[in-house]
Amino acid sequence: MPPRKRTTVPLDARLHRALRLPAKATDCTLSEVIADALRQALSQEARNIQQAEALQPRRTISLKDVGARLKRLGVPTIIVEKNERAGDSWRKRYKSLCLHDPVWYDHMPYIPFPDDWPVFSPKDKLGDWLEMYAKVMELNYWGSTLCESASYDEARQEWTVKVVRNGKPVTLKPKQLVLATGMSAVPNMPKFPGMEKFKGEQHHSSKHPGPDAYAGKKCVVIGSNNSAHDICAALWEAGADVTMVQRSSTHVARSDSLMELDLGPVYSEQAVARGIDVDTADMLARIARKLGPLKRGVAAPKVAAGEPEQKGERRVT
Image 1 (cartoon, rainbow, N blue to C red):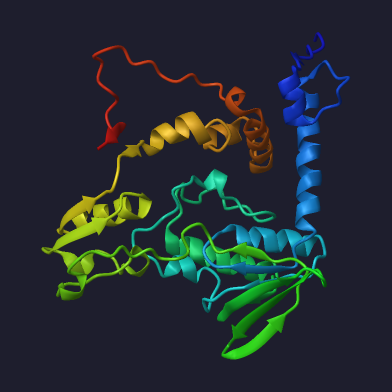
Image 2 (cartoon, helix red, strand yellow; image 1 turned 120 degrees about the vertical axis):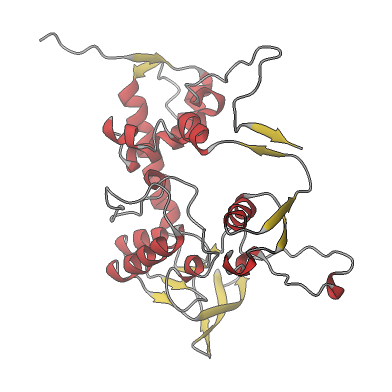
């Protein structure tokens, strides 16, 4: 059998900067580019992760990722959670909630999801998995603990974190503090004239109990992001007369399209079949972010003048 050919890629100045390669490098094999990028990523991750010694998580999966990695590195870590049990921030949400990212994108370090796990994880199933993960990984997890304040002392180079654990005040003095409260941890309730006079029910999506009690009733959902679509769809299926109100135009894309054009090449069943596990996928995604527009291997579809857009992919105004 003839030897396999080594595929070389020319390295321009932009690629040098993106991958932080030596200036003298001109051409190298693709495997060398990937290996170097992987070494850069892992070394940077190790430098970042070794600094963290305290966590304040609420609504994110990654808090347990970070806690598990820190524990493996021997870094003393406390995970502070206001809910009683790990995973409660998922369990306590509306009934139809599920992850909008596919399972291949959401694996936890050291213990991946089983091969037959749902592509889009239901909230209660995910909550139970997170609770199991915290126990099996023996994470130092403080449930029923509320963080009241955090301040940094420049002179002492340390944080003062005041928490209330099981009703008792505790002061922590970590060198590093990670805030993992999620991008939407604080409910945003808009104010409308006449709200105080309205006799019907009003609540934020984080307090939505599910659609069962609203069959035959008229409902209005303010907003048009993922939670709004989930809640509106469930209300409609339960027999409610539901209206969604949005402030500005929203780009609506099918989940299948996002999988095909964005996540699918590296985070999918097909990618796994090609030998791309989650660690390899993460490494490739890191390279893609550094390369910017060069990262895409799929050209944007061209729509001829007068040709209708694909069903389910449209701009809503």
